[in-house]
Image 1 (cartoon, rainbow, N blue to C red):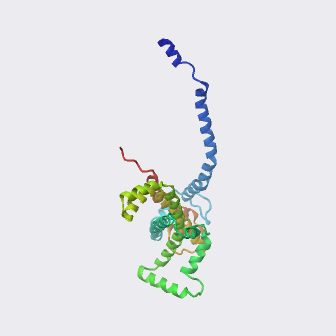
Image 2 (image 1 turned 60 degrees about the horizontal axis):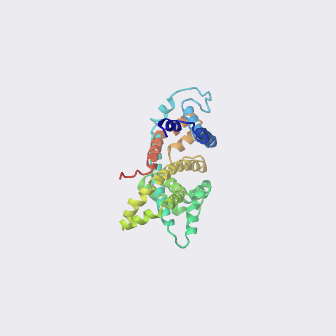
Image 3 (image 1 turned 60 degrees about the vertical axis):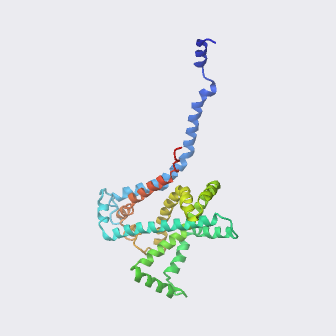
Length: 313
């Protein structure tokens, strides 16, 4: 065949299937966006809109006394940031999030490692571990409230009161109330983190752990050198979900404590400022003070959530 014929063959009309390829691809992309649209609307409606509304509200003077919603810029932030009471609430909030996240990760990892191995009664232990998260948070908080700070005269109320006073005497006034919030949230969220990490462990090929057992004989080194790196993305996601759950539980605490601040944390202070004081714009500004910190934590979790890079050959 001559070179002219070969060139004509190579540059001839493409098959119909090849011509339909780009059009079909565009239709598939359009269908994917249509199917994704409800989820996008839900996420932005549930998350983005309330945050945007809070940001806009924090820039106005809206309150029960003055519902005009006039724009005042950053005046609300300038009013709440220098206040020592709110600064203490912000510091307490950071300590609360750090303590609950670390403890829930520790409890979750231990629970996942325990349930990853078969043993008699494993199904019962699984149900008991899952129950605190599945149990309604409001009723669970009532039980913890009665146990830790009993409002009624019971067989254990005197003993718990003595423990509370002794604890506050050593660590300072309010330490027992802070511990109560931490224990309640760890009890609620530790089981969820454990089940989440158990699912992650079950998704990791067992061959990797078998190879590691041949190289590393010490169980502690195997945990830090093999298990933790493999679980790193899931630990990062669990940490972020833990922070979200810790903030949400504060709403239960505030409502079921009779709209009282059991311990000064910035978000419960914002609840009180809005519901009790009617200062909605200042409450919105107060609730957003730690937003940059939470955004930074989200960025760190996102970077840790990325898959591990393979070493070059």
